[in-house]
Length: 87
Image (cartoon, rainbow, N blue to C red; front, side):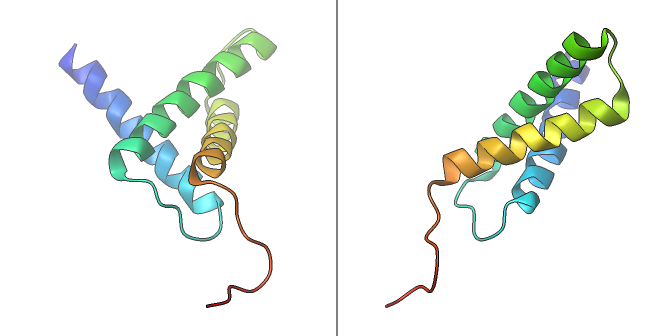
């Protein structure tokens, strides 16, 4: 049981961290929220690919998980200003 929780935390950290890297600019979310976004992205990505293909595929699930995590990071980080930043 402890190993499963640890595995989800590591997967969440990897998927969430890579999802943050896909979004340009500064993302003002912390480590805990990054892990939570990664876990949600991994679970959602696995569920979507299982529903579409009938079986979980590692690479496809991973890519879908990254896309979902990147979208969540973009939504949580807030709107971006376009153009130059003026002081």
